Image 1 (tube, rainbow, N blue to C red):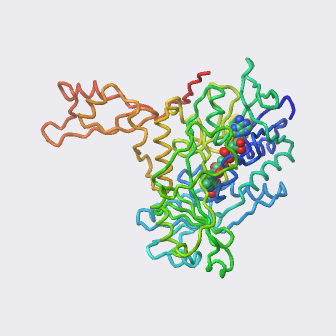
Image 2 (cartoon, rainbow, N blue to C red; image 1 turned 90 degrees about the vertical axis):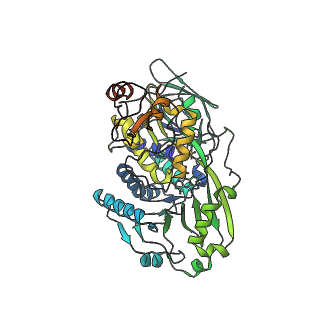
Length: 491
Ligand SMILES: Cc1cc2nc3c(=O)[nH]c(=O)nc-3n(C[C@H](O)[C@H](O)[C@H](O)COP(=O)(O)OP(=O)(O)OC[C@H]3O[C@@H](n4cnc5c(N)ncnc54)[C@H](O)[C@@H]3O)c2cc1C
């Protein structure tokens, strides 16, 4: 480890390794990636390793497509076999509205120039995945470019490719504090000594919140538990040539893929559970959380109905791990306004699918002042101090997790985090029929129900006349977001 670097990336998971790779690839030198333990020692080592094409935000779908292309490239560049299985994948619908949604997604892909997707019927789905029960399936969206990789190998591939391009990869070194000098540069205090750096990147994954607190910022991110199981060998798969595609059962809350001659089944349960909301303990290592089958049994039962062969197959391994979520489930990327030369690349829920796009965008931002693509959906600036509220984080991340496969409609107002900050007239307006939505961190009037009486047809606000009531009580329309909300810097 040198004593001076241009940039120190804290965190050797898939995201930090991708940031290091992209900075080096785009021409920066003097890059250090500092890892507390060994590479992958956060969420990354025990990911299910799947990648899927679908994302409701077209810009994020495009960055996911970039990541999928990059995985093979980085494997070749590093000389590490990343265990690429490009099996293709199916997301299917058992509900007419979902089928419409899949057809709309298909059109979105076409408009993005992603042409390796097609809509297929239940017979074709059965042909491609013979162990799937398809009796109630209306249709599915097939994508050629879905599959799975070996998560640890991918992290090592990014890191080795970055190293080949000049970056230093430093393991077994914990960043204990970050102290900013008056000129905006950083003293990065580690357990092996102090490093001076112009820029710091928080790619701390499960510890990202604690790394934010080192500079006085409470990032809106929290770990949550997540289960998958791996079965023993399945006779049908032993007899089958080729490999199953990845499958997402959108109405069943499960995803799956082949693991050797067995099946890996992952569950997004509605009865979600947070894990160390303040960030993982510093001594948390490469370990698993005790599985909690009772909490996921409803979704598990749906998974077993979808794959009848599971009824007679043993379970070889349970994985209950933690990974991080932001309130809307999208990554937190970019410069942290109010803290010079401090960048974030955290809250990445699907690091193997999105890590390439996150690394690319952040590296462009740091080097050129802005990312090439429109990444508004991932920009940390979409949140302000309001998002540090614990209850807000708890409700919104829980809502996101439990709705992971639930359809959301454009501009659909969701209930979480609504009434945490109320206007003075909240009670009176509620009595008057106001329905509340949320803008930023505050409750905001969504609709005012009119009284049914034709004669009065007015808001029953606590005032004398309807028109003056509306003038007095109804807030002016608020902007959706202020231009660049700042986090409260408390240090
Ligand atoms: C059960 C499970 C299944 C999953 N399945 C998938 C999947 O199929 N596909 C997919 O794309 N994603 C999946 N994920 C999510 C994926 O694992 C994460 O999105 C990804 O690993 C996040 O990577 P990261 O680099 O942001 O964080 P992490 O992997 O948590 O890495 C952060 C690193 O920072 C280091 N660090 C933190 N603080 C410090 C410090 N102060 N000093 C030095 N080092 C520090 C840590 O030691 C750690 O190694 C799954 C996760 C789990 C748990």
